[in-house]
Image (cartoon, rainbow, N blue to C red; front, side):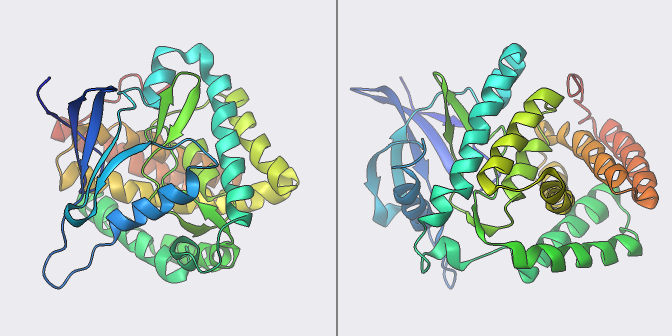
Length: 323
């Protein structure tokens, strides 16, 4: 077969599917080379994270490396993400939620406990500086670029309070982008990808990322399985878990909106469009649980503005986003 470029993810990496004499196909992963005056460690951080995760959880097998060129040959996991599997087989949702919950517990348990304290991924964290950067990213790319309006002042104050509460809780290894498009289905197993940006975070960070996913609406039963794995691993009560989860969910969903806004407005990638209304529905639910009336009304207003903007841009591909 001829080499075939793949669409890739939101990062700068490029993926090419090629023929392989033993495996049938494999993927060539191309990382950008350093620009003058700029050192991008993404390639080496992927290699290091892969070496740490590989003995404990399923990650793509590295077949060959060319470090000087920042090129990897890795196994071809196919094209079926967890999102696609769930769309094709919704009756399997609880089984896949159980497997995803096991991965969450593995990150919180053995992979956190066993992490070398001087490792690069445990040395960086969702501290206040990082959390404030992510809120600024949302302000710029979702509010100002996509909604074309500034966030309300009360939300700025609320996010400061959330950051101050979450930063001291950053004691657990977090994948950082744990959602249904970063979990590949291989047989009856889930394979985690896009983990090179892992860092210390709150115990509920990855849980918030997938439970309130921009790409999938979990049923109540499946969501309970995700919650159960994390709660049992931590030994927390429901009240303790939800006290932190509400904060993580607000922070994570606003951060995700920044990404979706950037991908739609700057990168013109329309397949991110359905994630915006879904994520805004999540935010409305978070504010409802917190009895934050102003937040509920604001989320509903953002939903109306987003709907008009998506319709205007021709990117409103929201059919099928609710189940």
